[in-house]
Amino acid sequence: MKINEENVNSEENSEKVDAEEASAEVDSKEKSKNKRKKEKKANKKAAEEANNAAVTVEGAKEKDDDKEEEGGTGSADADKKKKKRNKNKKPSSGQTDPPTIPIAKLYSDGNYPEGEIMHHPTPPDERSAKDRFTSEEKRALDRLHLDIYNDLRLAAEAHRQTRQHIVRWIKPGMTMIEICEELENTARRLIGENGLEAGLAFPTGCSLNHCAAHYTPNAGDTTVLQYDDVCKIDFGTHIKGRIIDCAFTLTFNEKYDKLKEAVRDATNTGIREAGIDVRLCDIGAAIQEVMESYEVELDGKTYQVKSIRNLNGHSIGPYRIHSGKTVPIVKGGETTRMEENEFYAIETFGSTGRGQVHDDMDCSHYMKNFETPYVPLRLQSSKVLLNIINKNFSTLAFCKRWLDRAGATKYQMALKDLCDKNVVEPYPPLCDVKGCYTAQYEHTIMLRPSCKEIVSRGDDY
Image (cartoon, rainbow, N blue to C red; front, side, top):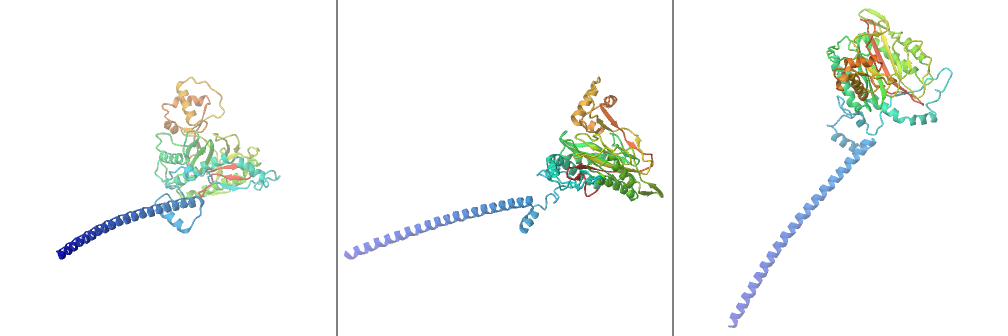
């Protein structure tokens, strides 16, 4: 019996060991499983943290790139990455082609490009123009008017980009209405048109050949630009009434190059001679001397280029394209002097004809008189039209196409009534003799206390 009890005890002990080993094996498997779960969770968490860290680093790099883009500095590697990210975006100049981005967005800091800076000429009696550029007093006066200068520079940049697009875009065979609408739509986008705060200063002049100025097509005009035409593109932009008045001559036939050169040289002469304390008549004499030193050969015949004596440059005021002073382009004229902080349109016209213009063709340009007193109007249609003019143009020039765009209808009689009462002034096209050719170049200048700024100057002219 004793032997049997030992066997039983041995069997019981063996079963207990087997049970403990099985239990240990289960525990080991559970621990292994839990360990794998914990390791999986740890790996997942580590991966998430690494991903977040990468995103944070990338975001920091993007911010650094943005700072580098604004500040103009940074490493070569950052520049490469920045170029790679921006390769499908707008060009380095910031503007699209054709231009669509408003100038104010291109220069978000509100500082717009300066024009060409020149010294004021020193008159023979060495008056106050001497040493202005280095005078701290004059530089301080400059700073007092920075807001005005900046508004004018914004308008000038919109003008520059618009005209450069139009020169590339225009081709012979286009209608004059098509050309004007493309130019005006582009300029409105770039200037950020906003009622009377910002927009176009006067209708687009596109005078052809013997017509020197003030022609823009009315609705229904079917005139087409030809290869042999000489077209004067004259348009204006403004910010808060600060006007850029700037024009150039467009041709396709090289035979007119000498005519354009004569007028461009004359305009640059007028700009060079202009300045504080300079007499207006002296500028006119210098312009005529340069203009009439040129000859142009057209179709086997030689013509002397003549200054158009009854056209001239002018001073510019807020919402007033002609503000009182005139800059002649022939000798004689006013002995009035230019003054500090005045703004001028220096423009010259050359002709192969008589050198004198007269009213001709259908009128398209109009402008409300700046100093007209209250005039009672009997016609209801005249009152309605005057309200449209006041709301959309005030004392800025306009044309019939713009009245159509503003919603005016059946306004011909009302417009005549306003002209008869001198509330509105008509400006018909100005023409020399038929068969001749005329050219025009024009820039807007600011007579700053310290210097002279040709604010509308560009790479083109």
